[in-house]
Amino acid sequence: MAAEYVPLRTKVVTKPFLVLAALALTGLFLIGYRYLAGLGAVTNLNDGYPWGLWIAYDVLVGTALGCGGYAMAILVYVFNRWEYHPLVRSAVLTSVLGYTLAAVAIFIDIGRYWNGYKLFLPWQVNLSSVLVEVALCIGAYVVVLWIEFLPTLLEKHREHPQAAVWLRRLNHALPVIAAVGILLPTMHQSSLGTLMVIAGGKLSPLWQTYLLPLFFLLSALAMGFAVTAVESIASSYFFGRPYETPMLAKLARVTAGVVAAYLVLRLADLLYRGAPVLSSGFLTGMFFLENLLYLVPLIFLVSPAAARDLRVIFLAGVALLLAGALYRFNVFLVGFSPGPGWRYFPAVPEIFITLGLISLELMAYLYFVKRYPVLPAEHG
Image (cartoon, rainbow, N blue to C red; front, side):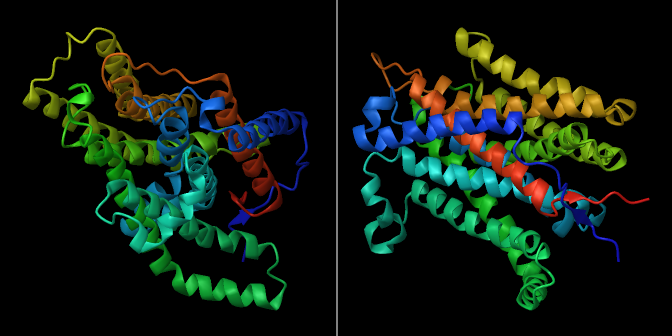
């Protein structure tokens, strides 16, 4: 039987890889300095803005970018759409890397990191805290994702008797693993929205609503489908592989359905609450930019002709990733006002630490797709 997935088997260390390595080393050096000198030495965080770039991008956006595995698991295992299965493994890889680095970022951001282990001691934490639920769910999901990715690692060594045994065991456990892998992101992606419901009047009415958990969940799903399409098209372009055009065209229609549901609910919520959409100055501009980034790709994706054009699907996917990222920045930073006198803009070391983590993620992606069977095999 022909293999469903294959490694690229090309050179790992290239010029782009070395550039990423330089950025990663810079980030790791600054992370080391953060642990020696404290958060104040490398960030502009303060009592008004205790969450900055690391939480907004590395955790909120990073985990949403890592929802490709979650979105594809719902499509394949819940809705029984197995024709999308060739896209699952690369989607799981992006999820593994995105969530692992988000978990790392949480521990960089914790002021008293030496107390971080207490999170895993039930008698040491407030079990009614949404933040605790988010942290535990993300931690558990990282473990589940690595288990989901384990067959990829074992297939490379399938000639070893123990690898074959463990592959059979994992295949038998797949329904349970997939179910847990769908449950955990559903819980913590919606709970990320719940975190800002608690902020009350400190969050602009353009974003403050009791539907925040639903909007965070839908935006994570949209980003999950979008990142799967963008990753597939980009890997085909850069690695000279065939494009999965028919599959991506059908996936585009699924993505359009999720985005349409999000926008309809978003508009209905704004009208019901009578939110001041046109009278909030700078925030109004950010609000329209965010929603235009959802609306424009939706218009293109609902067109059958445009949905079969990979350039349109790619650009629409990038726009949806920017829309989801901007929505999360707007909710946690731009639309949040802790009171007079507080300002926040990320310090240069904060930015370089984030760039370093992104570079590490890209380096790991390049290594895995070139050494392990991640991408769909070429048939026919």
